[in-house]
Amino acid sequence: MIKTAGLCFRYAGGGRNALSDIDLEINDGDFFGIIGSSGAGKSTLTYALNGLVPHHFRGDFAGEVTVNGLDTRRSAPEALARHVGSVFQDIDSQMLASVVEDEILFGLENFAIPREEIERRVEDSLASTGISELRRRSVSSLSGGQKQKVAIAAIVALRPAIVVLDEPTGELDPQSSRRVFEILKDLNEDHGVTIVLVEQKIMLLCEFAKRLAVMGSGSLILSGPVKDVLSHAEELEEAGVNIPRVAALARRLEERGLYQGDVPLDIGRARIMIEGILCDASF
Amino acid sequence: MNGFLGYVNGSSPLHNLHPLTKMIMSVALCAPCFLSGNHLLILGIIALNLCLFASAGGAGRAITTLLSFVKFSAVLFVLQVLFIRDGTPIFTLPPGIVVTREGVMFSLLFVLRFMASTMPLALMLSVTPVGDISNVLVRNLRIPYKYAFVITTAVRFIPLFSEEMLGIMEAQTARGVEFDTKNFIKKIRLLVPLCVPLLVSSVRKIENSAISAELRGFNLRTRLSGYKQYSFGANDVLVIAACAAIIAFSASGILP
Image (cartoon, rainbow over all chains, first blue to last red; front, side):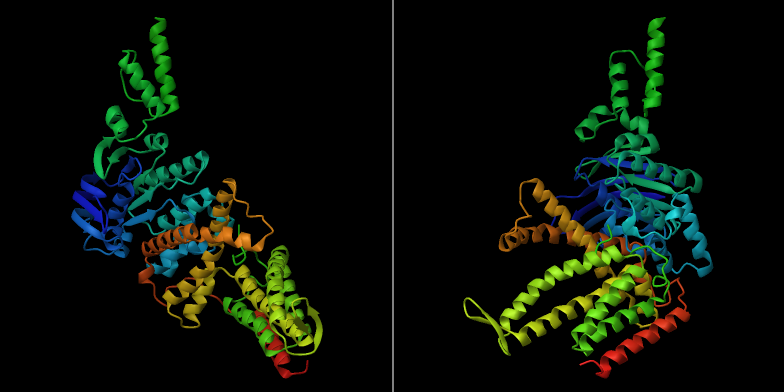
């Protein structure tokens, strides 16, 4: 479980707080999405969860962050890494080896995983991310989507209870982005891994996440189940977040008294909503 | 894109050698360039490098690498020839610059040595994953892991920086900068300002890599952390013997 209480952080030399009074609880097994405009503090929040703030990025830190009971101020990032795995947007710079297998081995070797268990973990992580056939390939020969899957597999092999991802699909095409989301969903549902995902692709995020947080200017503006958050259209617009078009459509129909019900989060459900309205109109 | 110093997938006999054997081979192919001053021997070493590249499935890459060396070497050759005035004059250039026989021979030897001594490193890196190099440096050569990681990371970043530079150049080309000018001085003047964005993006990449390594337990690693085991085989013995023979031959003075 992740819990932040009164979390404030200002980078050394920074003019304003990157994070202001963040109170957040993320339960075990959650698929938690974080969204917000540029400079909203999303990445800094992920750094606070994996211990990079305050250990790597120095500055004024106030409040408390606990991850599986560990206070991040008192635990080094290496210690926290046994609980929290991190994946970043920049695909190339998080690759530390030249071959996929070596990339997976890097963390396993460092954390002194028993030799007899390493092979099983490598196979399992490659299989769970659907890239078993890439095991012997050189990293430089992979596409962006494949590299991001390798990055996720390298983290999954460490078997963390929580995986924090900072815009992992930022450099990927829509098809590869969806595949990454599907892998995360499988990890969440099949292996019980808690997913904390910062993402700009709101349509995908709303489709896959169970709960959503909206950030703006370092503060937490909204937090809750996805449908509840999407119902606050005005706050979302103020925070610079475009709500999914299907949700915007539902809102307009609701304003005109044509629809009352759950906000649809994908095109399939939006279609059912419209068919329902047309059906009612024909009677 | 693999770049000039990147690893190339393969299962050739060279790929399957012990990483330490490949490192020894790289040094052994380099050594004759400095032990002998015979032009033909060094040309032979270049040819041997090309053959080894071809046997590892990298003939095209070897030729591309060699051609880029030749272009650079041509500039070095001309500069050397112009600066060496001692020896038997061959001809005199208009402002009174004397080109000598010794100058030409020394300059030729200089650029051949440059090409022949650089290719074995490229060959070794194209058939050895950097992780294997790092493991061998730590386990067999007892180099502290942090230093081994720095060496292998520097090698790994060269193609990344090269790609980054190409990306910046393409972005500037799209804005109308003409990098394909034949004027060398003008080209240099166009490239110099690009060093700033390259430096900024490089520092950012290095920072991200450091974070990624730190969050995967980099600081916890010990000398015995490496999972992979490497064993010496008959091919390793043969290659090491051949390397010893090459070094002995080039140092023997049989060739003038």
